[in-house]
Image 1: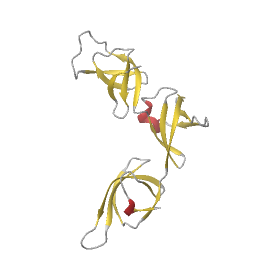
Image 2: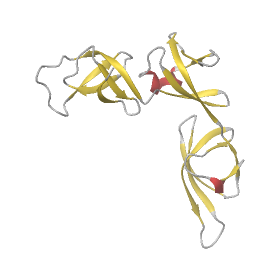
Image 3: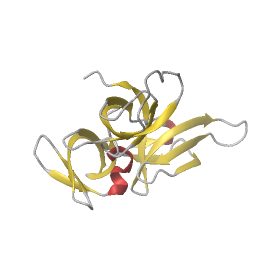
Length: 187
């Protein structure tokens, strides 16, 4: 159990059985009346944010978020299957659960999956991935102007803006948090 007076950025807690994370908080002690904690928090499952004032002694249950590194196996058209490398247990996840990460994952890649009460709610790709460009306009010799980009489709289907000198078949490094091209892969 924790109280609203214990709130800090990043603390997870439960309201009505759903997990929330504190985005911002402010302890307020007005001249008249009781102190309160003005809190901005986000529902971890739905992404909805809310601002609310709590009595500092109000009690909340800690929300335990479990994180596992799992291996992406395959997609059967409906579900995306991930395997726990410790016990080889496989879990199927829907497109809604993997939407942000799957465009950067190839089969057998590892991903971080977050669970709340043993139910997966978020999949994160590694921060940096190396992928092969499968489709882009051909680069022209001498095209090395800076800040000029073109669209390139990589092997997972993601579309990334790349410099005009990048050609099909080249491996590039991508920051999955922003979807930005970082450079040619050093493999």
